[in-house]
Length: 170
Image 1 (cartoon, helix red, strand yellow):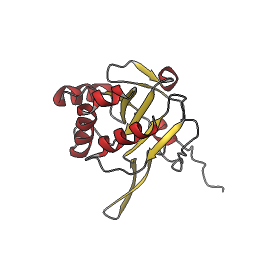
Image 2 (spheres, helix red, strand yellow):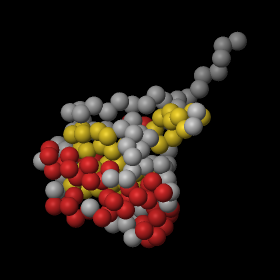
Image 3 (cartoon, helix red, strand yellow):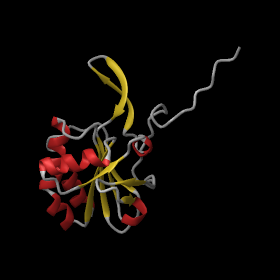
Image 4 (cartoon, helix red, strand yellow):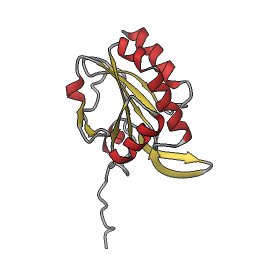
C-alpha cells in the first residue's frame, strides 16, 4: 500500500528564499483593526516589513517599541513600518494599547505570507527543532522590489540598523 499523501501547507513547506532585487511577494493581511493591508496599495513608498514571533514577549516588545520610537524618522524617509506575526487582531490591539505602539501590526494566522518571505520555517532552540516564526525584516522599495533582507535578527537595536540602511538606499 502506498503511503498517504499529505497536503503541504505553508507551515510545512520549505522555507522560501528572499533575494534582493526581486519582486516582493504580494500580500493582503488584516491589521489590528481588521482593515486589509495590501502591498499593492503601498507602492510608491518604502515598506519596512518585520516578522516577529508573538505579541507581549520580551524580544518582540523591544523590537516593536524601538520601531515605534523611531517611527518619525522612518516617516521622514517616506517609509511605512509594518509588523507581522501569527497573532490575531485582538491580541495586536491589546499589545498596542499596553505599550502605546504607533506602528501597524498585521495578522498572518496561517503563516502563508511569512512562508513566502522566508520568515516561517524550522527553528532550532536548545537542540529542539520546531516550526515557527523566524525573526526577520524585509525592506521593500517604492517599486515593490526587495531592497534589503535581514534574516534571523536580534531585536535590540534592529530598528536603528533598518533606519540606517533605508537612509543609505534612498
